[in-house]
Image (tube, rainbow, N blue to C red; front, side, top):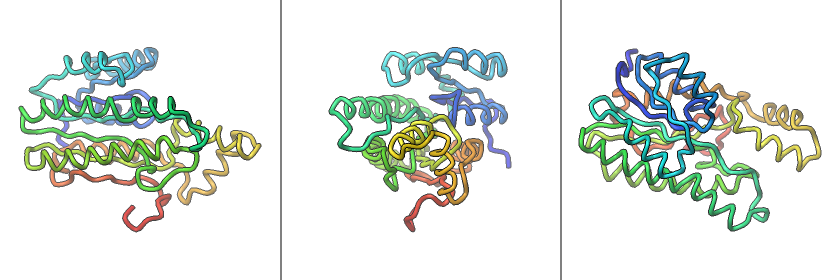
Length: 257
């Protein structure tokens, strides 16, 4: 299938590791240009050396308004088609372990900047009459994950605003969806392994093996979810919007998963 992404421009935040890295690589393989944002200069340099002019890099913390300012200046309104809104998760904690400062940080890192960048991007997309937004969240938006109360709570706010916004711009050529990954083989799982190891007094490796055993289809491959992301970024998904789509290998128990 021709995804019709050739010579189009996309933004990928958290664009060199995990899901973001896999999405960046696949977009470039389809002939797209990617604006990749990441904190790690070394990874950005590696990607830039490999992909050359197909990649524009921005080093910085995407949750900071000044970094979003820099990103917006790089968007080519004649080529820009969409964005993948992606970042790391909060620390693994149970509710009674959290402090109010933890909640303030979770709001800033999981919600506030996404509202900021979505408002800016949608205004640009309205001018061109076209655009795709894909938010990478977590299966915790559908089914709480043990020891991740901050993620369980704050990511639901992202679902709420994205669903509402999708309806407000429906019919304008702009679509937006959320991907809710389950357990995938990325660095983000490390905090879960470490928390489980601490609680059960076992090694981190044992905690990892226990989770893999309990997951019906094992750990997911970020490349597989990247393929789904590219379809959502393509014109082929023009009738899909406001959805939270699981990519979880049967972890989700609900019938609407």
